[in-house]
Image (cartoon, rainbow, N blue to C red; front, top):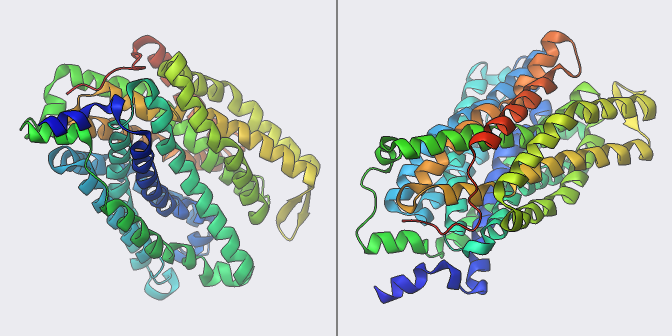
Length: 456
C-alpha cells in the first residue's frame, strides 16, 4: 500500500513523468480528433460522393447532418465508455476508443460512391460516423481524467490545457493533410477519389498511437481506489442516484459546456463553412486562413488554462463565451465586407488579395481566442467537480451531451438557418443565444474549483 500512497500524491509526481503522461495522452487524442474532424474538413467535397449530385445544397446539408450524427452519438459513448473507465481503468478504455475511432475512419476511405451502391453509401457513412461519435465519447473523458489525476492541484489548469489543444491540433492536422494531398494530386483527382487518402492515412496514425499508449501506467488515483477495493460497482447508477451529483452534471452542462461547445465549433468549423460555402472564397484559401488562425490560437489554450490556475476557471471560461456572444455578429459581418471589397470572382469562386487574406486570418484568430478562453480551463474544471470513483462517467455524460448535441450540431443548424432564411447571418443567432444563455446560468450557479484537491 505504501507504493500506492506514494503514487497517489499527485502534488509529488515528477515533472518528467507528468510530461510523459501528457505526451502519450495527447498524441492519441490528436489522432482521434483528426479522425473525427477530417470528415468535417472534407464535407463540402465528399457530399457529392455519398449523396445525389442533382441538388448540391441538399447534399451538403445532408453531409453536415451525418457529421452532426457523430456528435449526437457522443453522449452515448460517454455513458458506455465512462462506465468502463470507472470500472476497468482509464488506460484500457481509451485504448479501445482509439482503435474504434481509427478503424471507422479508415473504413470511410473505402465506401463506394452513391452512384455505385445507391442509398447503401450514405447508410454506411452514417453508421461509421456514429461509431466515431461513440469512440470520441469515451476518448476525451479518459484523456482529461488521466492527465488531471496526475497533475498537481495548483497547476491542473495548465497541464490539462495541453489536452484541450488536441481538438484544435487535430483539426489543424486534418486541414494540413488535405491541402498537401490536394497539391500533390491536383484538384480534379482530389475531388474525384483523392479525398479518400486522408481517411486511409488514419490507419497508420492509429497503429503508432496504440503502441505509444500501450506502455502507459494506470492513473494513480484509480490505482489507489482499486488497491483499496473502493471502486464503484455501478458508476452510471451512482452518478445519477446522488441528487448532488445530478445537480453538478446539470450545472456543468448548462453553465459551462453548452456555451463552450458552440463557441469552439462556431469559431473554427462554422467559420470555415461561412468563408468557403457562404462567402464563396476558394477552397485552398479558406483552409489556409483557418490553418493560420489555428497556429496563432492554439498556444492560447495553454495560456488560458494556466491563467485559470491564478484567477479561477469560472472567470476565464465565461469571459470567452461572453466575448463570443457579443463579437460574433460584428466579426462575421466584417468578414463579409472584406470579401466584398478584396475579392475577385473567378470560375465560381472568390479569390482574395493578400490584404483580404490577412484580415480574414486576423478575425479567425480572434474567434479561436474566444474558443481558447472557453475551452482551455474546462478539463480541469470538470475533473475537479466530480469524485474519483465516478469521475469518468460523471464528466463524460454532460460534456458529450452538451458538446455533441448543442456544439457539434452548430455548423448544421447555422447552415440550415441560413438556407431557409436566405440570410448570410441568420445562422449566427444559434451560437450567440446559447453562449449568452450559458453565461447567465454560469454566473448564477457555476462553482469555482481552482486548486481543489481531487476527492475520492
